[in-house]
Amino acid sequence: MYQEKIIPHSTHPYHFEKRAEASEIFKAYNPLCGDKFELYVTLENDLIKSIYFHGFGCAISKASTSILAKKAEGMTWDDFMILSKDFLNVIANKNDAKFEDETLNILNEIKHYNGRMDCVKLSWEALCRD
Amino acid sequence: MKEYFPIFSHQPDLIYFDNASTTQKPHSVINATTLFQEQQNANVHRGIYHLSAKATDAYEMTRAKTASFLNAPSEKNIAFTSGTTESINTVAFGFLEQNLKAEDNLVVTTMEHHANLIPWQILAKKTGAALRVVALKEDGSLNLEDYQNKLDSHTKLVAMTHISNTLGTINPIKECIDLAHKNGTPILIDGAQSAALHSIDVQELNCDFFVFSAHKAFGPFGVGILYVSDQYRDKMTPYKFGGGIVRSVTFEDTTFMEFPYTAEAGTPNVSGVVSWGIVLDFLNDLDRIAAKKHVQYLGSYCREQMDLIDGMELLPCSQNSSGIVSFNLKNIHPHDVATFLAEYKIAVRAGHHCTQPLLESLGVLASVRASFSIYNTREEIDFLMVKLKEIRGIFA
Image (tube, rainbow over all chains, first blue to last red; front, side, top):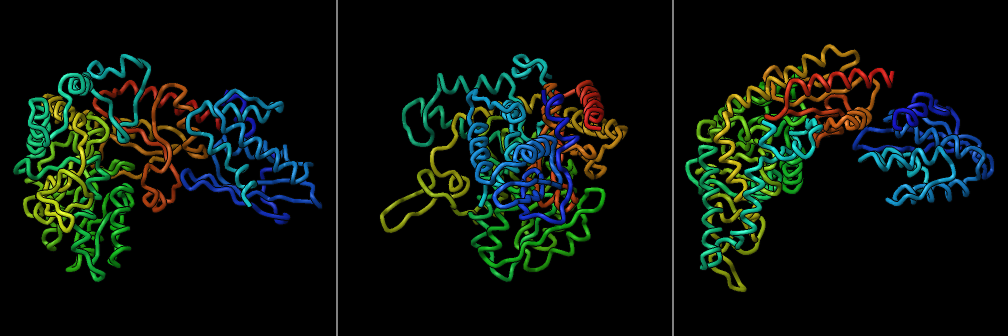
C-alpha cells in the first residue's frame, strides 16, 4: 500500500518548487526527524489561488503536503481551515472513519504504520497554526 | 542463542536489530520475575517476617553479585537506580552540584547521549560553570588532543561514553581516565552500550563513576546500576528524598545513611533487581569474550556489505568499533527506510538516537541505526542488504 499509493505522490509531488512571490510563507518543521518545508501560499481575496512547497522530507510528509496543495487550490481559506481541522481530527482517531475523498483516505491509512502520523500532519498543522 | 530468548519463538520472523535501544530477555530472567512475584513478593529492608527477610537477602545478594560483575571493591560501591539516566542524574545532583562553582568547568564529548549531556548542561547553567565539549576526528573517534586541551585546574568532572550509541565508536577510556586523574579530575563512564559484554573491571579502569542499565544487558526495564569508587562514596549525598535513606527523622532535621543507601530513596524496583541477579548468572555463564567478538564481527561485516551498496552513506566510525551501525541511503529519508524494513520484520531505529548535537556536528539530521547482539546472525545481515538494495530501486 505504502509503495503503491504513497510513492507516486512523493516522487512526483504537486507544486513542488520554490516561489519567489507568495501572499504568505509558512514553515513546517519537525526537529526530531529533520522534515522541513516552506509552504508558499498565494491568496486572491479569500480564495487560495495556489500552494507550492519546497524542502526536505520523508516520502509520507512529501506526499501529504502534495495532497494538501492540490486539495486547497480553489478553496476559500476559511473552508480550507475547516477541512484541515476535520482532517486532523479524523486521522487522530483510532476508529475506522473514512473520508469521501480517496487521496485523504490514503493519508488516513498511514495510522496503521507505527510512528508516521507526525509525517502526515506536518504541513497541515503548520497551516492551522496562527 | 535464539533458543534462550522466548520472543523469537513467539515471533520467528523477527530480525531484531535495535539492541542499542533495548535487548531481549532470556527465559531464566523472565521466569525469575514471575517466581519472585508468585512466591517471594515482599518489600525489602523493612520487615522482620520471613518473606521480607528473604526478599532483602535476594536484593542485597544482587548488589554483591553486581559488585563482582564489575570487580568493584565491595557491594557498598553499588547503588540501584531506575536506569543509566537516573544514575547520571544522581552523580550530577547528588555529588557534583555541591562541588561546582561558576569558575569551574565540566568536560563531555560530542558523541554523548542526551542522558549524559543534559544533566551536565543544566548543572552548568545552574551554577554558571562552563560546559566543554570534546571534538571528534573525521573518522568518528575522539580527538584526544582536544580532550587534553580542555582539561584544566578547574575541571571538576569528565563525563564520557564508553561506546557511542549512534556511531558505534569505542572510546579509549583507560587512557582518558588516566588523563583525567593526572589532571586531578574525577571521571564518569557511561557504560550503557558496553557493560553487558565488555568485561568491565572498574578497579583496573580506575574510573570514579560507572553507570549502565539492566535492560540493555538482557535484564528488565527500570533497573540501573551506579558504581561509585571508594574515594567518592562518602561525597555522595541524596538528591531524591524519602524513606530508606534516613537514620533519624524529626520535623526539624533528618540525618542520612551513607551511599549506596542514600541513592535509593523510596521503595526500590525489588523484583527488577532480583531478576537482574539472574541476568548476572546468565552473563557469567556466557563466554562473554566470544560473544563480544561475535557482535563486533557482525558490526564490521555489516559495514563491509553496506559499503558495496550504491548511495550508502555510513556515519563515521572509528576502527575500534562495536556492533552498532548508523547509515543513510542517499535521497531516502531514514523514516522511509525504517518503515520499509519493518514490513519485512526487520527492526531498526530511525531518528536522532538521542544524540541531536552529534548528528548536527556531522551535518546529518537523522539516520537509520542497526545494532546487533548475541542472537543476531550473518544471514540476518545478508537479508538486510537484500532489502536495502530493494528500497533503493523503489525510490530511485
